[in-house]
Each structure stands twice: as C-alpha cells, then as structure tokens.
Length: 384
Image 1: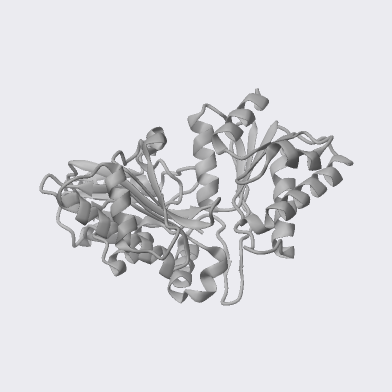
Image 2: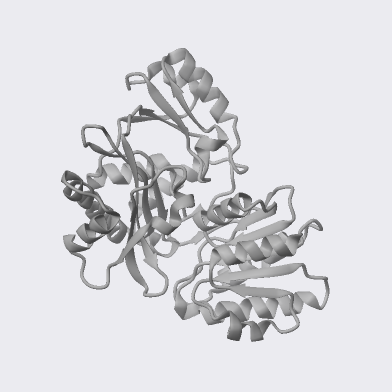
C-alpha cells in the first residue's frame, strides 16, 4: 500500500531525515492561513507518478496565485485520481538532485540500497546508472558509505548522504516496509541536503504490527476519491477498483506502486492501456483464499472489455509461493478458456524460468517473462 508524499515525509521527519517546512491543505481556502512564507510549491497528493508533467505541481508567489493554483490542482485528475489533499511546501533551490532508495532484492531476498547522481523526474531514463549494494549481513554504516562511493560522491557529501541512507534503512526495517525512496534528494549550492520528494510502500502483511501506519492509511482512506483498502484491526482486504482508459492493453498487478510503475512504463513505451486494476498484496507464505478470489475477480474484470487485446499481469510475490501462483493462474485461465475467448496474456513474475514454466500454460495464449521491460515490449507488440 502506497503512502502519499505528505505521509511519507511524516515518517522521514520522525526518523530525522531533513524535509522542508510544509502544511497540509484540505481545501484552497486553507491557503489564506498559510504559515509558510512565500514562495511555495503546491503538490497534488496522489499515488500516481508524473505529477509534475501532468500539472499537479505548481509554484506560487502570493496568496492569490496559491488559491488559484490549488483550485486547479484539486480538480486535476492524474491517472484517474483526483487529490483530496495538497501539500504546501517551502520552495527549495537545488543545485543537484540525487536518487536514493531502500527496497528488497527479489533474488537474494535481502534489502538492497539504490542510488544515483541523476535523480528527479527523469530518473527512469537513467536506470542503467543506478548503483546498488545488497545488505547481505547485519547492517552497518559501511553499506551506506559503499553505496555513496559507488555513486561517485566526494567530499562532505560522503558523510551527509551516507547518514540519510542509514536513516532510510532504519525506517525500512523498523516499519517492515517494501520501499523507502527519496527522489530527489536535493543538494543546495551551500551543500545542504533535503528530501524534496518521498515515496513509502507499506507491507500489507505487516500492518498489524504498526498502528501508526494503520492510522496514516485510515486517514488516506477517508479522504480518497478512489476505492482504497478497507482497514480493520484484523484484516486488510482491498476492494477491487477497475480504472477504465481508452487503449487495448489491460494491466493487472498486486500493489499500487507496481500498478503505477507498469502503467507508466507502458505509456512511456507508446503503449495504450485499456484499464488497470490493483489486487492488493498476496500473503508472503501461502496463496490465501482471499487472494485467490481477488485474482479470479481481477482477471474477469480486466477481460470483460472487448477492446482489451492483451492483458499484462505483473506480480511481486515471495519465491516460496511463486510456483503456487503460476498454478492458480494457469488453472483459472484454462477454466475460463472453456467458456470464452481469451485475449493474449503477458505474465511478468520475477524469478520465474520462462522456458520451463511455460509448460503449465500449454494451449493458452500466454507469454512468460522475468524482466518488466521485455514484458511491456511484448504486450505492446501483441496489441498491434
């Protein structure tokens, strides 16, 4: 489950990661009581990426400009989602922008530190330049400094940025998160570092251990215009919410961040999404009945539209349930094929072996991939 930027920065502030003075804006009139000195930047609080390019980030020099900009942003849908909250933040002049992240390496099942000297809105275009360090033993500052040196930073930045990475890692572990990302980490002309944007993905299965995260997500659920997961003290079962678009590629994923990343990559590659749906997370160690039913319903909803020529399924699961998931998908598609004509399917699952695992999908229009860029390319070609 993705946290919104202002929620991620709440966690950053608690961890001692530097963030700018900011204020939550629930409606445009709140800006008349803004406590941050101008100029400010107003940011749409939605889960989709590409807010800046879509017009969801605006600068304002005074109250009149800020109110007008806020009214526009509140009514601007980004990837089908309109914000119910804006973030007003002090303007920051960055001399350089870095990319930093802590996530899980699906192959080694260990945390991995990621970093690049080229951050900001175009980080996707420089993926090949992102450095990584896998934390394969007990964490120590050595891992953070190793990443910084691989990134090519020098001088005072070695200690400053290393300290940020250490705090990101502590947050990642303490809250059982799937991702902690700062993009960009701004560096001022005087050498000051600042987390200018942040992304945090909470692990659905670990929420029961973190009441503070549940509180943040409940607040997001109350203000969201989309159908978000219903959260109780015992359960975290997302409702399915199919978002309709105008293309010919259906997208089915199990995580909001994964869904948005897949959608963005298809659009950046000149593909045309027909719809997209987030199933929510799978259990880490077994295919539960709840997830099985969401999977079946998700496939049904994605394939109902006649304009869907190809469905790309992009799942992230623990290796221990990877084989079970393949069996579930193959079994259901075979059952569905008896009563209806299936579109073509592109299945992306990290760690699978496309050459051998494809045997389960004999006589089905399914292609298997273990790399997302190859899966996206195949889906776009099949949809032509």
